[in-house]
Length: 82
Image (cartoon, rainbow, N blue to C red):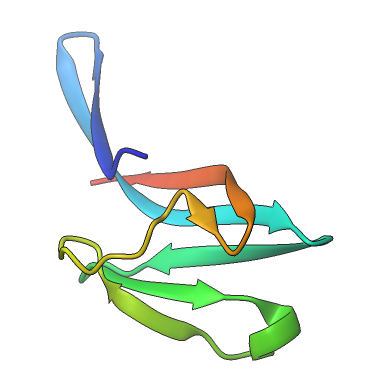
């Protein structure tokens, strides 16, 4: 999964950065949220309730696998323009 990409349109470049991923499996949705500072947080309402679990920095070697989480596969990637 790309952490960022550039879209060229009408002689202009627009850069987008990954901010969230939604997963589906085991009959419910989970997600990763990436903060502006690059922190990766995991949310699973069934096990964590209203809390989120810190998983590392997106630009580090210790960054979790963002494509697969606990026998689920990414369903939706959310990017924002920077």
